[in-house]
Amino acid sequence: MNVWTGLDAELSGWRDAGRVATLWWRDDDATEATPALDRMLDLRARHDVGLALAVIPAEATTALADRLRGEAPSVVVFQHGYAHQNHALAPEKKIELGPHRPATMVLGELGTGAMAMERLFGTRARPVLVPPWNRIASMLVPTLPEIGLRGLSTFAPRTRINPVRGLLQVNTHVDPVDWRGDRGFAGDDKVIGALVGHLAMRRLAGLQSAAGGEPTGLLTHHAVATEAIWGFMDRLLERLRAHSGASILAPDEVFARS
Image (cartoon, rainbow, N blue to C red; front, side, top):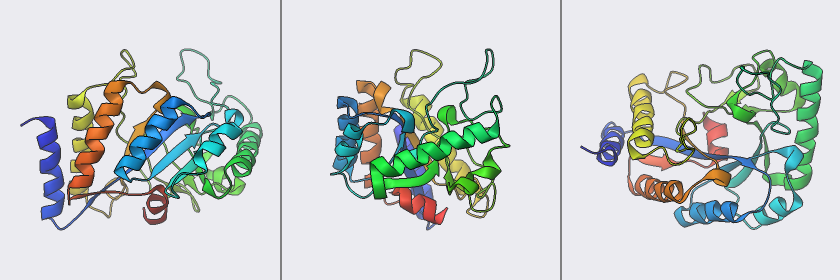
C-alpha cells in the first residue's frame, strides 16, 4: 500500500466512524506581492479552500495589501512576529520572541506590528500570532491577550487548547519542505506519512483531548516552494477535497471552534 492509498484508508476510517477529519492551511513569511504568492493564491482558488497568510509586519508592503484585496474572505492574514529577526546566539535555535530582550521591548514590537497589520489589511487581519520559527518564550505567552492577541499558532501538536485565558492555540503539523536537507520537497513518503500519522493520532485520541481535537494544519512557505512542492500541494488538496471523510476549514472556522 503506497502512502496515498494509506491516506485514503485513514480518511475512510474517519468517515466509517461517522466523523470528518478537519484540516487547515497556513503559509508563512509573506511580505510582498510576488509571482510565488500569485502561484499559491491561484492554487487556493482552484481548490476553493481557505488560507491563513502569516505576514511579517515590519516588512509588509502596500503592494501585498493591494494584491489581497480581491481575494475571497476565507483568505486572512495572521501576524508573523514583528521583523522575523533572530535574537538568539549560536548554537541556540533561532528565535525572535525569546528571553534575550526585555519582555516590554518584545511586546512593544508586537503591538506596533499589530497596528501595522490593521492599517494595511483592515478587516482581513486577525489577532492571531505566528511566532517566527514557530518559537516563543513561555513567559511571553500569558501576556499576549493583554496586547489584544486572541490566537497563537506554532508547529507540532498543542498541549493545551487555551494556554492562558483568552488565548486559543491551533498549530500546524505537516510541512513539505526538507529544511534539514536541500530545502526542496521532502517527498511523498515523509510528508504524507506525517499527515496520516497526525490524523491517526487524532482519531484514536478523540475530540476531548487537546491534541485530538486540533485540526491538522498544513504549513507552506510560498517564497521557497519548488515545482515539486506546488505539484504535491495540488494533488493533496484535490485528494482531500474529493474525500467525504475530510474537510478543509477556513481559518476563521478553525479559530472559532477548536
